[in-house]
Length: 181
Image 1: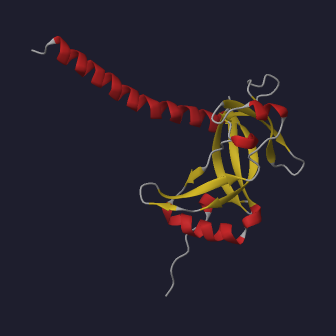
Image 2 (image 1 turned 135 degrees about the vertical axis):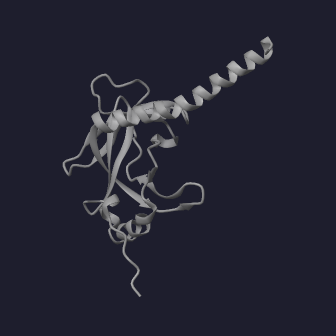
Image 3 (image 1 turned 180 degrees about the vertical axis):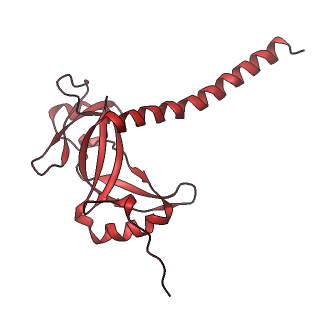
């Protein structure tokens, strides 16, 4: 029969394991909800395809416009929670309009993030895709550097990358080229 200390250790272990399973499940639920019901925006980006032996092939995304300069940005500390409002230009591409310490009340088009120096914003940076297609996708990207953008969905301050497009084509749909000898 287990004594009280062993019972407490077992309950603590079960609790920790449950939390470890619930955290990724909650993240998946929030991201799926954002993808299904969030407002859609297109952001111009740069991307490259690094290889990491633990993560495999993925696209490293760099938003071209990831900073905001307004009076409030100078009062923010590095890593501080902030809210970036999103606007759309005439060409259809989005940009971050204003960075505030308070959650915007006049719009639902905002991204909750953390401040970096000089009004820079932490944005999503990785896009995982089928490894068999990643090298071909990188070649297409390199041929169309100026025509790369991401489609993101934003809901309740959360931003999820829905797709990477090169010259109007979803990068995931690029078919691998067969090696011909």
